[in-house]
Length: 234
Image 1 (cartoon, one colour):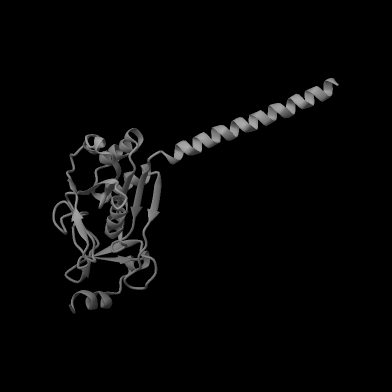
Image 2 (cartoon, one colour):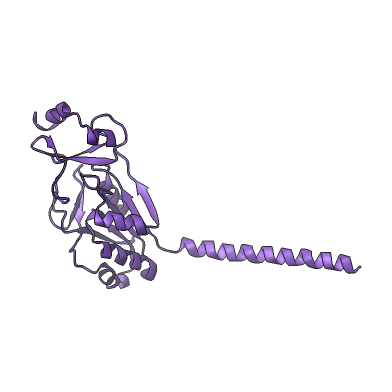
């Protein structure tokens, strides 16, 4: 009889432990769904990053949710404080200075019930500003989605991109194709006066006329005849 009672006690103990674990797991899972995250979506030139951020902003706002759209002041292709896509869509954004404290800037807008912070050309952010965005996520519980290049035209990580790779909760690559072979592009080649550039300033704002997406192979060995056709025949 004693053995039976011990067995019954062990069964009930294991049963209640299982129920407790399931309750704890359910609470943790529900809590994690409500936690904001830091996202970094990166891709080579012409991978659709700007059109994607504009689409995300539209989706939030169509549901009546407040969006804060930002872009570093160094990106002046369409004007200061403007997010613009190559297909002609654009909208105004908050221009971010290199010395701006993004945590305090966003914290000051928290009462506006921000649903999300969206940042274009995030590669131009300072490392400390990426840290500040992580604070926004962790302490203000506001999701932050950043979009930008991973590396420069010489295959070196940008300061902002490097820090985002280190801190982001989720990384996602946006894909485009190599201008020479049609395979997936992983970087971009800078073209000046119809010639590939292997050195120079990291920040050199251009557009289709200044950069072309390439795979690694064609970054090292670009088709010079095709470059001439693309840039000098126009």
